[in-house]
Image (tube, rainbow, N blue to C red; front, side):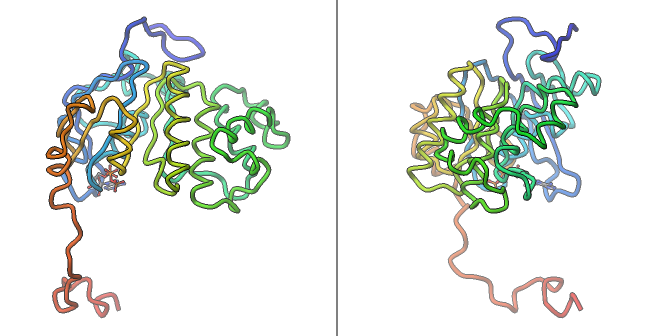
Length: 284
Ligand SMILES: Nc1ncnc2c1ncn2[C@@H]1O[C@H](COP(=O)(O)OP(=O)(O)OP(=O)(O)O)[C@@H](O)[C@H]1O
């Protein structure tokens, strides 16, 4: 396998992802597998929404695709290579081609927004450039342009811990714009946003993915927005793919079935019904 500064060499026409009967688990998880028998192929430029009830495995799938979580069986290829068979150095190079925007971005609280956003370029910098950037941001204009696309340009020099939840979320997404990734993996980007910002955020992510012909995989709880914006819908439930279809083939009955039994119970349980180990006295 050849390699270069941008990561292992890949031939044209290679899918961004190819997963075949992949399963993954979490140490100490409540289910045997968080993902089971996942077969999925994603091409460059494809945009797909991951939907499914809470605990379905969406975050675990995104973590797996970002090469942060190692599957325990099945096969997994990213850009035509098996990430977990690469050397640490090659895997590090491969990760520069993937960008995971977690639901709550891990931004250093005391950092300025400009520095936090420019950190997305770390994989492209040498150690010296990275250290200098901590003191004197290398390209504040680029950070401002990225923030402005999420309506956040006025927060360029704000401290991260002074941002609201929705601002932090968009700050994390602005980092994505500064990455050079070809696979954009976004976990519930709208959870802290109002409807107008939700539309802007989705539009920005989709324009960016289209402009760089990157694959965009985005988990969403807002099924209506998923169906309105994404051409391909992948539904997960209990760690399995329930359907993977073009949006015009997804029916309301399929959505109802996907979320069946996911409504919270109408009545909270009576305290007498609590399991013994949850009773307050059991902690003392
Ligand atoms: N770090 C962890 N340790 C143990 N189990 C975990 C861990 N993270 C997730 N799980 C379990 O794995 C399963 C899938 O969780 P995951 O977070 O991938 O679901 P999700 O679809 O993203 O849920 P949500 O919509 O609530 O974010 C769940 O049963 C969850 O409890």
